[in-house]
Length: 290
Image 1 (cartoon, one colour):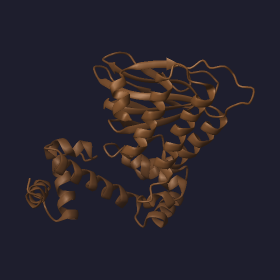
Image 2 (tube, helix red, strand yellow):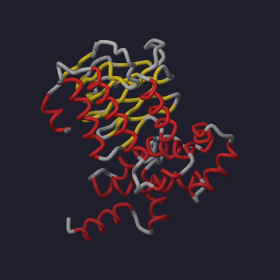
Image 3 (tube, one colour):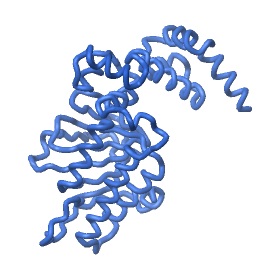
């Protein structure tokens, strides 16, 4: 369905459907597939009125930015953003950049309830499986392409999008972190989205809404690792992926993984993996026959 949405082409649609005598509590009010290139594009979550609604936005090409209550995210291809408004956040396009995405705006108390559960559990940005993205794209395509869509059909598409998000965030049986307390899951999502940034324990405790000491105890109990050790492990895993999937230099990988410079990265990598980063790349590619 994602390929069909892309083939359909860029389109933005506001839905002005007749009000039902029996209220529908999950209803799209707009949807679109569009691109932004080298232009002023910025949305402030506290400047969009007082009526509550949610935004689902999936990045296909390029990159956007999100400031979510002080936490910074890079919205790269394959990532899905979910926001509940009004809220202290802003998302925007950096000057000179390109951002292509599809999106839906949905309101109704059931949509809001699900969105808040999802955001509380895993934060506002996710990397979802391809089948889940297809379900979101299908809902978006239905909303923008069906000129004669009824309120019931629009609500069905909206529920389908929310159910896809639910499954993508909560129903991944391969993700052991789903059984973790919501605050700890939220911190892990923050870590994974900000590996290039500063991940001090004090900041992670703020994300968890706990005191520093209480957070360290709860995080260690839940994951089996102290926060600093967990962050290092996640960064090293990210470095391995970049070494194997790209030809980036160690100097370029270092800031992308939160290290001050290539020497610091190489020392940490050698200490944990027993070999230098480029030695790791060469040995793994040789073993894979590439």
